[in-house]
Image 1 (cartoon, helix red, strand yellow):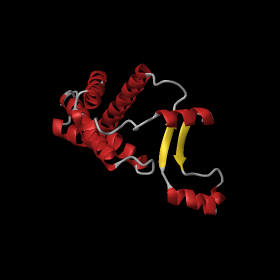
Image 2 (image 1 turned 180 degrees about the horizontal axis):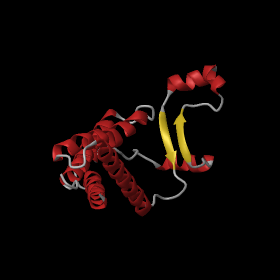
Image 3 (image 1 turned 30 degrees about the vertical axis):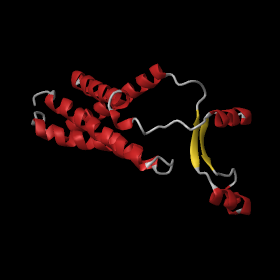
Image 4 (image 1 turned 30 degrees about the horizontal axis):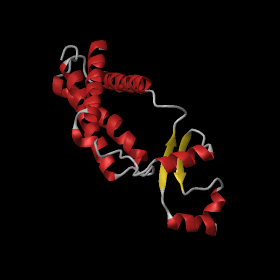
Amino acid sequence: MVLPVLLAASAVFAFSFLAWMVLPHHRRDIRPLPDETPLMDAIAAMEVEPGLYMFPNCEDPADYRSEAFIARYRRGPWGTLTVRPSQPKFGVNLAVSMALYLLVAAGTAWVVSASLPETPTVGAVFVPALVIGLLAYGVGPLCGASFLGKPLRFMLTDLFDATVSAGLNAIVLASLWPGG
Protein backbone atom coordinates (compact mmCIF):
# COMPACT_ATOMS: atom_id res chain seq x y z
CA MET A 1 0.00 0.00 0.00
CA VAL A 2 3.00 2.32 0.19
CA LEU A 3 3.05 3.15 -3.52
CA PRO A 4 -0.70 3.90 -3.79
CA VAL A 5 -0.50 6.14 -0.70
CA LEU A 6 2.54 8.01 -2.05
CA LEU A 7 0.95 8.47 -5.46
CA ALA A 8 -2.41 9.57 -4.02
CA ALA A 9 -0.72 12.17 -1.82
CA SER A 10 1.44 13.31 -4.75
CA ALA A 11 -1.63 13.72 -6.98
CA VAL A 12 -3.31 15.90 -4.34
CA PHE A 13 -0.09 17.89 -3.85
CA ALA A 14 0.19 18.50 -7.62
CA PHE A 15 -3.45 19.56 -7.86
CA SER A 16 -3.05 21.90 -4.88
CA PHE A 17 -0.11 23.56 -6.61
CA LEU A 18 -2.10 23.94 -9.82
CA ALA A 19 -5.15 25.25 -7.96
CA TRP A 20 -3.23 28.03 -6.22
CA MET A 21 -0.53 28.86 -8.76
CA VAL A 22 -2.00 28.18 -12.22
CA LEU A 23 -5.78 27.87 -12.23
CA PRO A 24 -7.79 31.10 -11.94
CA HIS A 25 -10.33 30.24 -9.25
CA HIS A 26 -8.25 31.42 -6.24
CA ARG A 27 -7.00 34.67 -7.75
CA ARG A 28 -9.56 36.80 -5.92
CA ASP A 29 -9.57 34.83 -2.65
CA ILE A 30 -6.77 36.73 -0.90
CA ARG A 31 -6.61 40.38 -1.89
CA PRO A 32 -4.13 43.11 -1.00
CA LEU A 33 -5.26 46.05 1.10
CA PRO A 34 -5.60 49.37 -0.74
CA ASP A 35 -2.67 50.69 1.32
CA GLU A 36 -1.12 48.16 3.69
CA THR A 37 1.68 50.39 5.00
CA PRO A 38 -0.35 52.16 7.75
CA LEU A 39 -1.69 48.83 9.03
CA MET A 40 1.75 47.18 8.97
CA ASP A 41 3.24 50.21 10.76
CA ALA A 42 0.48 50.10 13.42
CA ILE A 43 1.00 46.38 14.06
CA ALA A 44 4.76 46.88 14.32
CA ALA A 45 4.32 49.86 16.67
CA MET A 46 2.00 47.84 18.93
CA GLU A 47 4.61 45.03 19.06
CA VAL A 48 1.88 42.45 18.50
CA GLU A 49 3.13 38.96 19.35
CA PRO A 50 2.70 36.20 16.75
CA GLY A 51 -0.74 34.61 16.96
CA LEU A 52 -4.33 34.74 15.78
CA TYR A 53 -6.35 37.80 16.73
CA MET A 54 -9.99 38.80 16.35
CA PHE A 55 -11.27 42.35 16.61
CA PRO A 56 -13.07 43.89 18.27
CA ASN A 57 -12.35 41.66 21.23
CA CYS A 58 -11.72 41.74 25.00
CA GLU A 59 -9.25 40.07 27.34
CA ASP A 60 -11.92 39.53 30.01
CA PRO A 61 -15.28 38.04 28.89
CA ALA A 62 -17.04 40.28 31.43
CA ASP A 63 -15.97 43.29 29.33
CA TYR A 64 -18.17 42.14 26.44
CA ARG A 65 -21.09 43.79 28.25
CA SER A 66 -19.30 47.11 28.73
CA GLU A 67 -20.56 50.18 26.89
CA ALA A 68 -17.11 50.78 25.41
CA PHE A 69 -16.93 47.31 23.87
CA ILE A 70 -20.52 47.42 22.62
CA ALA A 71 -19.79 50.76 20.92
CA ARG A 72 -16.61 49.37 19.28
CA TYR A 73 -18.49 46.25 18.22
CA ARG A 74 -21.32 48.23 16.62
CA ARG A 75 -18.90 50.65 14.94
CA GLY A 76 -16.55 48.01 13.47
CA PRO A 77 -14.58 47.11 11.53
CA TRP A 78 -14.58 43.42 12.42
CA GLY A 79 -11.89 41.02 11.39
CA THR A 80 -9.25 38.46 12.13
CA LEU A 81 -5.52 38.92 11.92
CA THR A 82 -2.76 36.33 11.81
CA VAL A 83 0.67 37.58 12.81
CA ARG A 84 3.47 35.20 11.88
CA PRO A 85 6.67 34.87 13.89
CA SER A 86 8.77 35.36 10.73
CA GLN A 87 8.56 35.51 6.97
CA PRO A 88 6.60 32.61 5.46
CA LYS A 89 8.83 29.64 4.74
CA PHE A 90 7.28 28.16 1.63
CA GLY A 91 9.54 25.09 1.62
CA VAL A 92 8.41 24.22 5.15
CA ASN A 93 4.77 24.96 4.29
CA LEU A 94 4.96 22.70 1.22
CA ALA A 95 6.57 19.90 3.26
CA VAL A 96 3.86 20.17 5.94
CA SER A 97 1.17 20.11 3.25
CA MET A 98 2.68 16.97 1.70
CA ALA A 99 2.89 15.32 5.13
CA LEU A 100 -0.80 16.06 5.70
CA TYR A 101 -1.73 14.69 2.26
CA LEU A 102 0.25 11.54 3.10
CA LEU A 103 -1.59 11.28 6.42
CA VAL A 104 -4.99 11.56 4.68
CA ALA A 105 -4.03 8.99 2.03
CA ALA A 106 -2.60 6.58 4.61
CA GLY A 107 -5.58 7.04 6.94
CA THR A 108 -7.96 6.49 4.05
CA ALA A 109 -6.13 3.33 2.99
CA TRP A 110 -6.13 2.02 6.55
CA VAL A 111 -9.87 2.59 7.10
CA VAL A 112 -10.77 1.14 3.70
CA SER A 113 -8.54 -1.92 4.18
CA ALA A 114 -10.00 -2.55 7.64
CA SER A 115 -13.58 -2.35 6.39
CA LEU A 116 -13.53 -4.24 3.09
CA PRO A 117 -12.87 -7.84 2.05
CA GLU A 118 -9.35 -8.85 1.08
CA THR A 119 -9.88 -8.39 -2.67
CA PRO A 120 -12.48 -5.62 -3.13
CA THR A 121 -13.57 -4.18 -6.45
CA VAL A 122 -12.38 -0.77 -7.59
CA GLY A 123 -15.82 0.68 -6.86
CA ALA A 124 -15.88 -0.81 -3.38
CA VAL A 125 -12.61 1.00 -2.62
CA PHE A 126 -13.52 4.24 -4.41
CA VAL A 127 -16.74 5.09 -2.54
CA PRO A 128 -15.44 4.94 1.06
CA ALA A 129 -12.14 6.51 -0.03
CA LEU A 130 -14.06 9.41 -1.59
CA VAL A 131 -16.20 9.93 1.52
CA ILE A 132 -13.17 9.85 3.82
CA GLY A 133 -11.36 12.30 1.53
CA LEU A 134 -14.34 14.68 1.49
CA LEU A 135 -14.49 14.60 5.27
CA ALA A 136 -10.75 15.19 5.63
CA TYR A 137 -10.24 17.79 2.93
CA GLY A 138 -13.64 19.47 2.94
CA VAL A 139 -15.54 19.32 6.19
CA GLY A 140 -12.65 19.82 8.59
CA PRO A 141 -11.48 23.16 7.18
CA LEU A 142 -15.04 24.48 6.90
CA CYS A 143 -15.76 24.00 10.61
CA GLY A 144 -13.92 27.13 11.72
CA ALA A 145 -14.06 29.11 8.48
CA SER A 146 -17.22 31.04 9.26
CA PHE A 147 -16.04 31.89 12.79
CA LEU A 148 -12.81 33.29 11.38
CA GLY A 149 -14.76 35.41 8.90
CA LYS A 150 -13.66 33.71 5.71
CA PRO A 151 -15.81 34.95 2.83
CA LEU A 152 -18.31 32.56 1.26
CA ARG A 153 -16.41 32.65 -2.03
CA PHE A 154 -13.22 31.52 -0.27
CA MET A 155 -15.08 28.68 1.43
CA LEU A 156 -16.64 27.59 -1.87
CA THR A 157 -13.33 27.57 -3.75
CA ASP A 158 -11.80 25.62 -0.85
CA LEU A 159 -14.70 23.15 -1.04
CA PHE A 160 -14.16 22.79 -4.79
CA ASP A 161 -10.47 22.03 -4.17
CA ALA A 162 -11.43 19.58 -1.42
CA THR A 163 -13.80 17.74 -3.74
CA VAL A 164 -11.16 17.43 -6.47
CA SER A 165 -8.53 16.38 -3.90
CA ALA A 166 -10.85 13.75 -2.42
CA GLY A 167 -11.61 12.48 -5.91
CA LEU A 168 -7.94 12.24 -6.83
CA ASN A 169 -7.16 10.48 -3.56
CA ALA A 170 -9.98 7.97 -4.15
CA ILE A 171 -9.18 7.39 -7.84
CA VAL A 172 -5.50 6.71 -7.22
CA LEU A 173 -6.10 4.47 -4.20
CA ALA A 174 -8.93 2.54 -5.90
CA SER A 175 -7.08 2.05 -9.19
CA LEU A 176 -3.87 0.86 -7.50
CA TRP A 177 -5.51 -1.15 -4.71
CA PRO A 178 -3.81 -4.53 -4.31
CA GLY A 179 -5.96 -7.32 -5.73
CA GLY A 180 -8.54 -4.83 -7.01
